[in-house]
Length: 512
Image 1 (cartoon, rainbow, N blue to C red):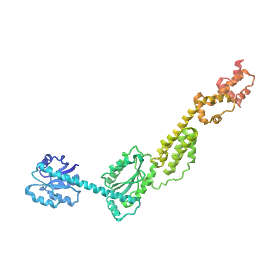
Image 2 (cartoon, rainbow, N blue to C red):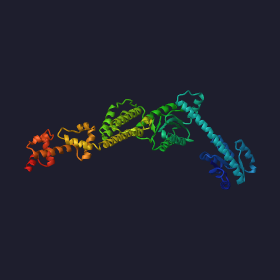
Image 3 (cartoon, rainbow, N blue to C red):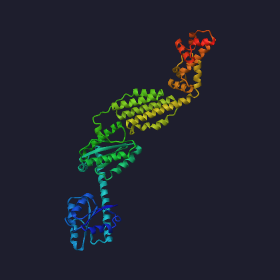
């Protein structure tokens, strides 16, 4: 452990000798400055905050003992003093004892003796710092315990009230910063917060439940105080970058006895953090004051739109349904807990449909999207809706994969059926009913396997049959059109010309 030492002597040679002859680093000190008289030394004590001051006694302007007296009168932080004196100045040493200075070095300095004396002082400083640390820890824990009782609205004894009142006087304003993280990153984040707050003044870490902790912090109206506090909180935000963590700050309070209000408003702000654009910012209560949440939402239309899109294997329609829901949630400012319930319900319906519509096992999707723990998760709305979008997209992909697998051997059977029944009023809907497939998917499957659409296939078969009948019978063109499946001659004429680049009569004339 290294401590700072300030050297004061009006003799330049003596100062240089102390710096050169004594191995300060070896005995645990570093020289932070040097001065030549008591006035200069007093100013440097204020600026440099040394742990130890080694000072000559007999100096111009202000001697060493006058400097020590002035320093103690100003109630400066606990700094230790060592005085330098000669044998003829022993009465100075006696006066120094009255100021609590019980260490002195005789001039001329003998390095070995000086180092032995200074090493003893170093040990005293170490013990004193350890004692202060223990006292600070005990005091810190007492303050934290009293604050927790205040948050839980437990009756405060007079000692606790007095303690919080005294602590409150250190700062003009107090506030509560609420932090919530996912279970798997909570412990790490709390350790980082504790490390950042170590030895910070007017900041207290409060453990809460449900993967939450709080930071009670005080600040004054001076720019430096407020900025330093916010820099510490912002540094915490930077350290959890990339993780899903909510940080919200409540309304300020005049003292710690009112910190319960700051805590409640921080909890309110935490709820609204759901509608923020990301996790890398501190959400403040003042951003959402007087903006009531909506706890009513009719989810029927959303469920129908999403399940309908899944049924049709329509990714674009599914995307639009999710985007539309997100817009309505934000416009209506629907309470996050309601949004989560709606999303969980929709995802469960998607899973149910997958189970009902195929022989697939959907356990992997349940595990992937962790539905049971979703209600307590830390999500901004955009990420939650992206999770729903990913779930539905995975569902559509699974259905397509399953139907593709099932359809490998059925395409020939469908084509055979079309060849047998093309003269009838055949539609994809009717085929879908016969082969238990969705019409949209069936149309895509036939196009992929045959290279042409269902309608093109039917028209080709009909015109091929019409060509055979034109060559082998005396039937009228209108009768042939009806026989091959056209209810209107104009439609038959159009399709014949497209495929043969001539009319039925022109084709017939080429054969005779």
